[in-house]
Length: 191
Image (cartoon, rainbow, N blue to C red):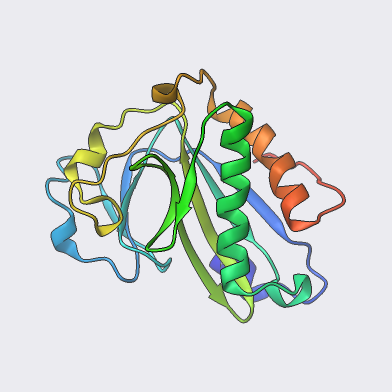
């Protein structure tokens, strides 16, 4: 992501990378080690994204948005709100009522966080993005203060009665992101 962001030109197409990570805790730029309570055998990786500590693992969709904000005429707040609203729309389509919070970026079902955001903007271009809990083991979240909040409850699509895998969630979210951010076409590449 960093290399892509540093090397892209004004003509480089924006990209969205959708991945599923092996188990890992990531500590953002504002991350405080005391929010990692008991990592056990899960590795901890320092990240240059915004935010505190979170967990990524199998069954979670992670989306990296590599967008030229200047070209799209987006501010950082526009990007954050756009991602949150995209996730809210996607969840609504699944029959899940959710909302964003002004005091804590991400998307919540009641008081439980279902999606987290962590972004970085350099030279007017974004990287990093969001994670959406689809169908995963939530136990590792009990080993941290998710996003720096002690006792923050975490949920997922499966716990909300939606049976879906990461690939299905990816396909649907691409359409929502395309619509929200005004892209006319999508080219799929796999690696």
